[in-house]
Length: 424
Ligand SMILES: [Zn+2]
Image (cartoon, rainbow, N blue to C red; front, side, top):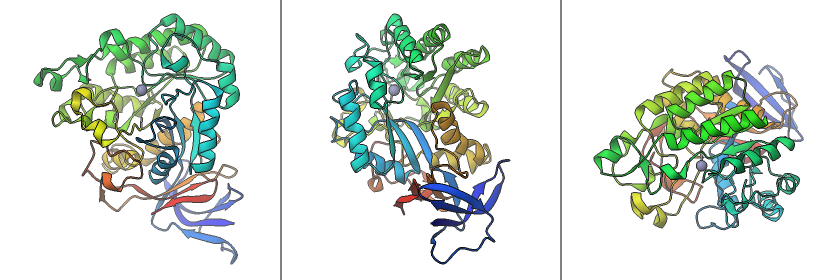
């Protein structure tokens, strides 16, 4: 028996209350008030003064293994997740080899079991080698344990290919998760088509390159009935389409990353590749649309798109460096400090978008602090301020635009199935 004592938790109506959380065999047995006496044999972790949340769920992570172990491994990526308060992460299939066979899925699951410290849910790719030419074997991949299909990193360019993928996925009751990007509109660009691109004489990625795929795929989702989930939404146009699709009852859900809620292209300080990601930082108007969409539920969940790269790779500069930034260790503190501590959002909204909402959408048994739920739990210090210091990250990646930001809301202890997997 483990008891987390004097925890500040969110009650149903969103207000805070104090509770003891009783854990046995990896499961939350009871939440009681703090007058309940603790038996002498119980192991106690005192959470007095701290907020206790269901463990966060991140449905969009690049763990890089197999194939790119110099960027990240399942061991380092899951440690980074635990330090950021995440207890479940879903990993993208753009590994080497691409996660397009049951063997690679099994390899990831085995590694996660042996070397990982949080729950790892693999995606399988939609097309072989993510080349967009031939569908993978969805039946075999589902049997191997994938939770959905995506070619994240690239868009599926061919509409018939995407429609076939959706038909198969619907048949198997699996979601299709899409990186939306029309290659004919973006070739060669590193930043969005906005102020920064104009100032530096760069070709920009236009908003339509994302929204065209979102619109196409919404229509294909309507035609096939599949659950269609849009990756890392970044434009006002995509949001407009998703909002309308939801009004029509089409099975579409969507995610957004912290950086698209906090930064625009006008914040980019110069030709620094730590500000290069895909989709790129958009205009202030797009940022405002993303915030509003997360608030009103048009965008369902927060994800990090954690994308570690080595320092040599990122040192190649804006033009040549690969896309992506790390995100697991800063996501909650960033959003807590900028949206909750400022009074813009209730804490319950942010927590829900990172726990119960992803769990509901993807049918996961976690994401709730209640009796009978797995004891995946994050203890958070909402008061102490620290600067973002990449040299202290547990991820191998140091690629972040948030270095030096002063933030509150840092996790201090993370439990998975009732076991402390990380503590400060
Ligand atoms: Zn992507």
